[in-house]
Picture 1 (cartoon, helix red, strand yellow):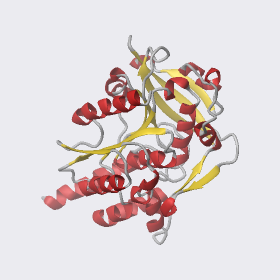
Picture 2 (tube, rainbow, N blue to C red; picture 1 turned 90 degrees about the vertical axis):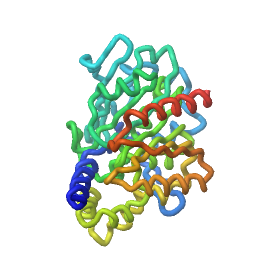
Picture 3 (cartoon, rainbow, N blue to C red; picture 1 turned 30 degrees about the horizontal axis):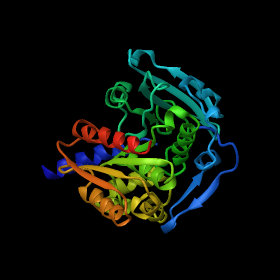
Picture 4 (cartoon, rainbow, N blue to C red; picture 1 turned 180 degrees about the vertical axis):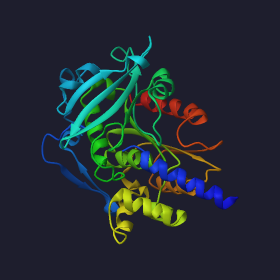
Length: 330
């Protein structure tokens, strides 16, 4: 019975990795930055420029979601009428990077132009519908932007699991920095399981921009995780990353938070499920230990029952944590 349970867990995790998350067109040649332990990322000029102390003047910043089409690379902004209420709204944003179309969904309170709300760049583990975004974020006074991964929901391109497709997350951040209503309350990154790689990498690559990072069932060391899970997961990663078996350890190292946590400055809240058959809680514990040694403000919460993303108790702790940081930075 245990073998059957373990096999089902591996199959479930495989589906999650294939469907997990992970774009505005660059305005100029990318800049390359590197950090300790060979963590490298390509930084679009739009993000680097926006993150400088000489940010766009307030009168130049976009003040409404409909005006996001003024951003280079944003093709359209469409209201999702079926999900809008008297107090919250949802939109689909279509944008382009390297000639490929990308989509994201935004849910936010209707009075976002009058009040200041924190914004969460959300990389979920599974494809929740818009109601999930509205009920768990917008109704709780948090703006949320969910990025769809390459190859899903009409998104063009090929997913390579926080490799080249990390540029999509970077361009989403660049779009946020052009909008006053998306930055005044602070920009946060959040992810679950495979989505944690995007959330943590954003916090590491843009330590002066990301106000806080939240992860659930994170994988701290992908090479160790692959050894724990066996050949099926190894084969899956070979497919996702698109490399040879000899190159896989190096590629997994690039995606492992244990190799780039040093540049994360933001507070980090971690959640893990004590009884999960998918990702050992030792990964969350390892990352917390590393971040603590780095001087980060961290929290680790153990959850039951098993799930695969933020819900229930996790949201009860996550939302107040986000609001507290947002209020303190005003």
